[in-house]
Image (cartoon, rainbow, N blue to C red; front, side, top):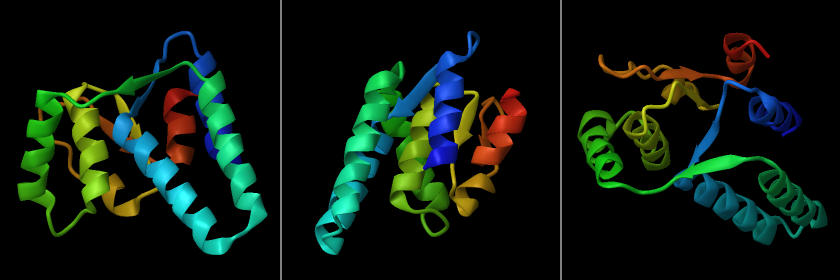
Length: 136
């Protein structure tokens, strides 16, 4: 989480970049964190939830909300990538395409190998690639 937090803070402070997060990422992150915490009964998980919420609070995030265009692109991705990608990854990708994002930063190896259709400027990169690509 440290590398991701550092990268998000750098993006947030960069004068030429805007930190955008699909609402689906926010929901998935909260869901996975809460589910993991309930299953493990590990008190540190509660601290992680608090740290995540605090990080979100201090960053200037523009949340990408559901839209007709995002829904249409997500539907097309279901038909195109149904067997190759998890539903949440298709949704994150769909939002990024619909909103014309320059970068989609992900740890998912399958998603990173997706061939973005012509006409979209989106580059799908890992955390480390993002640091290099964005020049951080």
